[in-house]
Image (cartoon, rainbow, N blue to C red; front, side, top):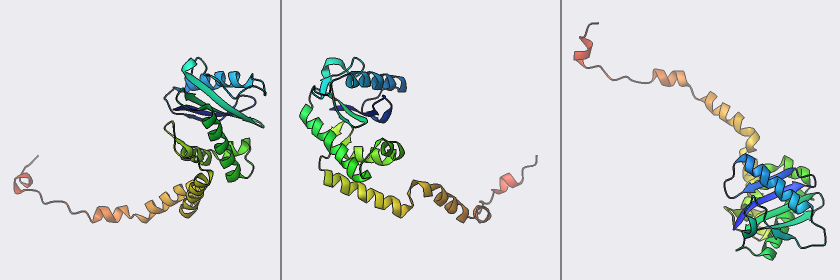
Length: 191
């Protein structure tokens, strides 16, 4: 099972973080820092997986990573996952991002965080691998993009909400409310 997906740059700045187990914010930052220190110190000619850090599970977990240009893509997994399978999964993620953003770079991850999370959620959900076919993932992403364009996207949501509220004539609706007649006993009470 996948415990976390982390993407950070060569300086250790996180660009994408997705934890599939709950950690508070402080612990997440410690995990990111420790993971970066473990991965960034490794030579280029060694294998791309190592034992998990002390904070993310120790010897029962593995850090599987790939280093592309300025970004490290790291998957923290338990012992039930195949190292080579996760390396292939990282490749699928990177190639999918590359096709969706046309030569993906660090800025794409920063400025299109919703789209990047959507792509990751098509691949992994709740720590389990859902899809490994890049064409299927791209098809679902394009469908999502079409839906957002039809709806005007997130940016248009506040304007749509205001127009709906303006079209509601609240004062007329209040006037149209019929109150029930009071029973005769209550009408005769004097205060």
